[in-house]
View 1 (tube, helix red, strand yellow):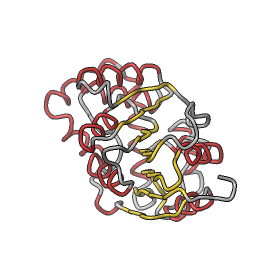
View 2 (view 1 turned 45 degrees about the horizontal axis):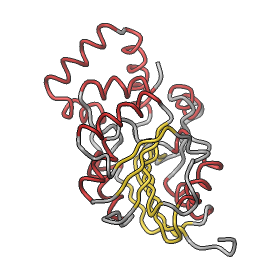
View 3 (view 1 turned 135 degrees about the horizontal axis):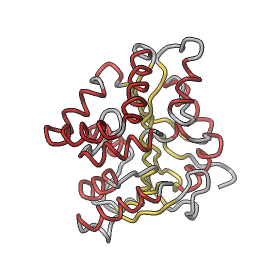
View 4 (view 1 turned 90 degrees about the vertical axis):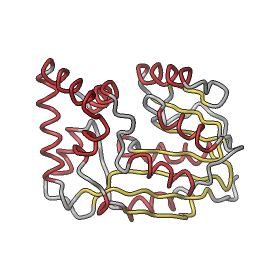
Length: 254
């Protein structure tokens, strides 16, 4: 069972937003990235399309959502059709390490809990490439608030399919190293509810009932989710949540 499998189950049960901070943090990043009418936005790791549709409906922008999963792409296309957003949201199966877009074609790129799973040395130059000069990158990720104990980082990487992270200052430095002027850094670790309680509130009674049925039918999923929950408990005081927003600077080679 992978994290993507668990995400799919949560989506099927009615959870709209899986990343820490929820829609409020999406909106904060969008505003910091000056998303609005006339902006073309890339939603990296768009999942089933809820963020892309929200951005188009709320800010009047045009959005391209990408995901590596064919199932997620199909689900996102269905949601776009259901909401009548075909003229404003497109969905593409694509790899963040080799984006199939022309240089400088987006005014903003939004990323939520994706770059922790990527080869950042390959992905960040691609994100910069597809942005216009002066365009914005916003990236929300799980971070380290303190040095993890021996073995913890390796356990996270194994449990979550290659997940790696670093302190929020490390994410800021990554932006700078890739030609971004950092305009905003937000650490919201102290304002986060326990993720499990947040999901239960989002699911509601009907969603919890559906999730219970799926868990009863899939004992492997129960085991793996219990393991992830144990990791999060071990990570209390170590794991945090935050986002960085940066503006693409011009360079002599542009």
